[in-house]
Amino acid sequence: MKTDAILSNLKEGGYRMTRVRRAVVAALSGSAVPLSALDLKTLLSEAAMRVNKTTVYREIAFLMDRGVIHEIQFGDGKMRYRVCPEAHHHHAICVRCSRVEEITMENDMKKHERAIARRRGFKVLSHTLEFFGLCNSCNGK
Amino acid sequence: MKTDAILSNLKEGGYRMTRVRRAVVAALSGSAVPLSALDLKTLLSEAAMRVNKTTVYREIAFLMDRGVIHEIQFGDGKMRYRVCPEAHHHHAICVRCSRVEEITMENDMKKHERAIARRRGFKVLSHTLEFFGLCNSCNGK
DNA sequence: CACCAAACGCAACCGGATTGCATTATGAAG
DNA sequence: CTTCATAATGCAATCCGGTTGCGTTTGGTG
Image (cartoon, rainbow over all chains, first blue to last red; front, side, top):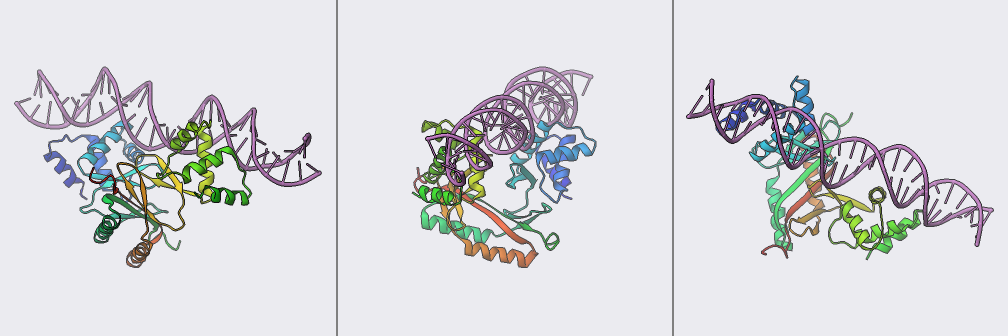
């Protein structure tokens, strides 16, 4: 589990180690699926930890600012969060179980971005790419 | 302008032609940038048409159900809508002027989807891909 | 232990979107 | 032209994810 690595990094950065911070980082780094703010609050509550939703949102903002986590849009109006991977990548999101697989295709995307710049003078600064479908274990059920 | 074509299609489908429907379709098919529900309400109001926001939302749902328009996520918490193009495509969204250009790269995407299916058994049902950056006229300013 | 900023809790608030219900108006049938 | 069913509309209340202002608590250092 990379929870400890994240926490010690933050500690070295001079940030405080609070119960909420520990719990949020642990929940996010231990989850196979991206979590929404409410998901996090529910998880912590189930662990007998009383937390205010504002605190959850502020902890999310804190971790986002430090590049520890990033957000994913599922398209249902709720932001989901998960710990940042090493390199930029995309997601294959299972519409049944919500599990997320990471897809790397940066070489191809770079190629496309260059083509867009060349053909229409549009300078790409960022992009979002998500695949929705059925994961290996959900497919066929 | 394809407003008339859309409206006559709906009419043939047996749907009523109301002032709001006419105005919403005209606004969407005449706009270079995707419009939010509030954008639509404001536009209609400026055309001296008094409309309730609920009606706007319901008209959007109606047009979505019939495949006349589709929604785009800018990532700012507001859905935007625009008339469906003939073929599936993606967007290059200018972060300065919000203008949207259509990008077609379905052959490549199909290739990627097949690769994802082959390599990890993930069956892709749909995908979203948006490029954010500076359009030709905004770039360099 | 004392201190101060970071972190927290609470309540009120915001804005996009939805719902229930009563009312209006479209378009077809007579 | 009138009648009529129902699609469409308006209104008010509500939901829900997320934010803000402010007073209080707490982590961790001196």
